[in-house]
Length: 143
Image (tube, rainbow, N blue to C red):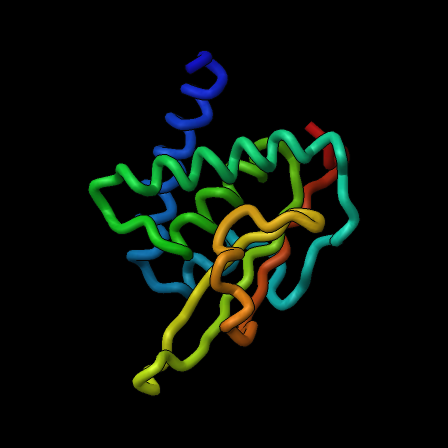
């Protein structure tokens, strides 16, 4: 593994920890840090961002399996959003709800940047979007 990959993995571990901490406090206190409520960022692709988006997605998915804390959909989406924000890349975090087989209400979160889904895409079609947060960045949107 090269040093850049190790760096991404270590950084993702840090942001997964931050995401887990943010999940443990009241959502009303966390929401303002997630971006503009009920807005979305552009779906236009920024080809120069594709490699970074892929690396962030891979690092989050790999490290989420090794944390000693719960790192499910919301934790992963927040962590990836923070990693992209650091790189001045816009993203939109989605919150959705659905009913499971027994009729219980379940929730899911996923993250999109441009036309690419970074986290949570594997189950998002089952959920109705009830909230979204656009993390827009000023100036240059490229890395």
